Image (tube, rainbow, N blue to C red; front, side, top):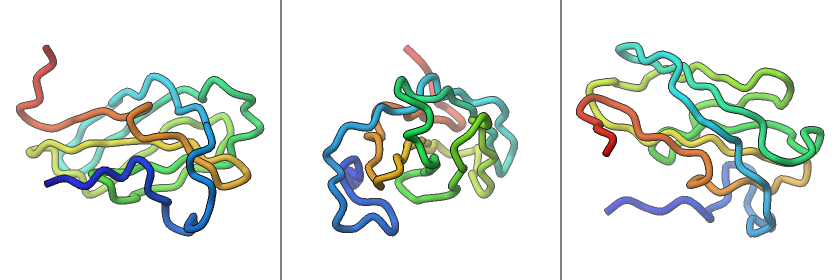
Length: 116
């Protein structure tokens, strides 16, 4: 059974008010899928961009990368086997440590993933 990490604090965020609303990043896309890595991109969330401190990229609930906020809204994630399905989420983290909910910016990738 898969654990729902939606309302779980991220690393270093224990004890923070995670229920506060932080808008999620928008339009998460898979730019390139290589054999063992993926390049993803997204748009800034619908909020004041200066309130976002950084983004965190999760693969199957595991933190893989942290991207500082700014104009760059893409990330290369290594160690992602394209022959099996993976759930990739991007969280927006504000300056107070609050973050967006994963379902707001999640995509499933991998071989044999079909869209209906």
